[in-house]
Image (tube, rainbow, N blue to C red; front, side):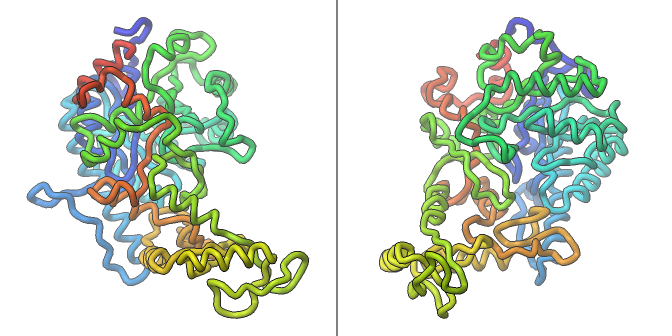
Length: 467
């Protein structure tokens, strides 16, 4: 047992302060989270478009039949609730009274509040807590408390927690089980970088977590309420000076990337193999997500194509002005696109390379794509089912008008489609593969030598040794 690591009381029982990070769209499912709980930790079922099963145990494909986006959005919410309820019930059964089961939701997902109510209503007595980030989830405490369930907000700074605490959480303080600090430079998936922070200049997490604890103390929150360190956690021995540290108070640790490579993990075998080949720097912190958040994923051909698409981009004006002295005659129809001479030459070159269509962005620029990509972009935008509360790619917004009022952005992509395909056997080169920035450790950690893939129990036992 690693020195100083002690069980905590959570959900009415003693558990290890080891939390499985919730990974949405069917990745943190019942098999992985139930096994994590059975091993004595806190397993996390993702309630973000989880899988449902038919009577034969096969995954039910999430196919949409509604003619309008609003109709498809209602189907999406029904799929989300049914799937998450099914996953929680199965995970609870696997946990068999050990550990605890949390659920994870993204506040920026479409219909988040309705999904949360729907899942908690149908899983009473099974869910110990709700982790929630990706946005400012002010209503989280109120909803969780109404079902007698703990809540664990995910933040990336003390400043964000202070805003949540003052506006809402202080009114339901008894249900605050922990605060998850998700490091915006190290964690996989969506990251909470603020506009004041440089994505290329990572900050040491220790002073940021200490500042979070100071903020919690200002609010009268006990040091016994843990801060969960999430992002970049691999070996507990690397965090030795955080454990039993009076400056930080109680600390727990979240593991998001390591549970991907277990026997119970539902990701396809080629994805697991890809994880063992990663080098440092092969996980990219990028801003192509239609959420508007930064996010971290494996820099595969899919991400590289989005990078290249954004580089084939020029600004335009609708009238001749300033440097915009030349009418664009490549990739567009009509004469009201004025560009610089240099950009005109670049556009002609891109068209010559096969990128024959220029698509408008919300920022008065044009991106050049080939005909196949144009057709896919248009189809995906048309098929939108409102999986986000607001989406830059499709201009969907969960409001009366169902529109952000902005032009749909062809520099982004349909994240729902891509994540569903990635976990259900689609091409690993053509879809988004979220991962934390420490994923290269799979290649160097002796635990995984000779192609060894542990069970979740073996992984938890290994983590508990400090390795």
